[in-house]
Amino acid sequence: MASVVLELQAELIKSDSRLSDLLRKGLLISKKLHLKDFETWILNELEGYNVSTPLPEYRILYGKLYTFNALVGKRIMSISDKSFEELLSKRPMHYPMPELEKMIEDSTNQNTLEFVFSGEFQSKLQNLWGREYRFSLHLEQYQLEGIVGAVKTALLKWVLQLESDGILGDGIVFSDKEKESAALRHHTVNNFYAPVQNSQIQQHTQGSTQSLTVEQVDFGKIKETVQDILTKLDTIDVVDNQREDLGVELQTMISQLKSSNPKIGVLKECWASARNILEGTTGSLIASGLAAKIQFLSELLK
Image (tube, rainbow, N blue to C red; front, side):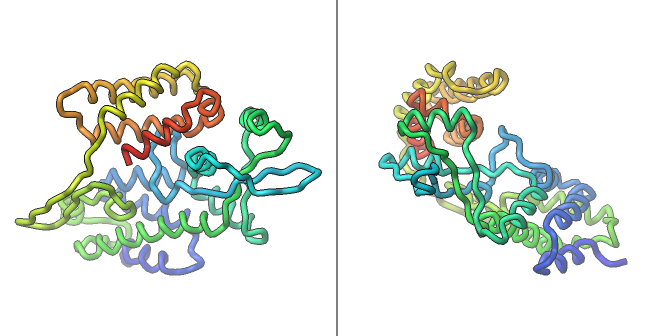
């Protein structure tokens, strides 16, 4: 029988292949080979990312901010505070892949997608600007196509590596030897799709050495900023269970920062989870004055 791995390779290089279908075939392969990391990633791509799940870099887009009213029409927003502008223009794309594909199809004629800010957030922005404008964020069609392209490339790299490792399958059945080989190779998804900052990853190497230079981290400023956010936790507009999760992540960061040797990896992981929660609360961040602090902390922990 034909190899499912080779079939997926062939389908991935076709321009008319629907990514959702290819992901389902990838899910079948990852499940049968017991590759949990890939299975989780593919399910996130198919079903959408939970707001508490860190997003891959390729799913974080930046658009153009626009205002509209009947008298002056549509205009690009001008914001002098660049960190505030970045916060407003950032659009995490948690959507399931089938929904993203539908957005791309629907935008074919206009080449642009408009995301209108929610009613409550609209009111906050109108109060800030003192105008009854409609505020929205515009993304280009090619940006969404970039997400599709990144996922296709990651899938292709993965199945090419499976072939290189001698893991092909007989139809959709894999031998015990192939399953053992997949386990020993330690296939992890972010080795195939994500640029990793301050990371040392080597695969299939023996006797190798590495060196890494890490910039000096200002733990004092990080601690001060986290404490500021904690003091205003009650003013952030999140549901109770998210507020509790946010508090846990921030308190974990404080505990690390109190130690004699804070672990930067733990701090980055906690902040990534905390920021994912905070990204959905832009309106209350503006009102509480935390927007700039969050951007500052993200720069310190990038």
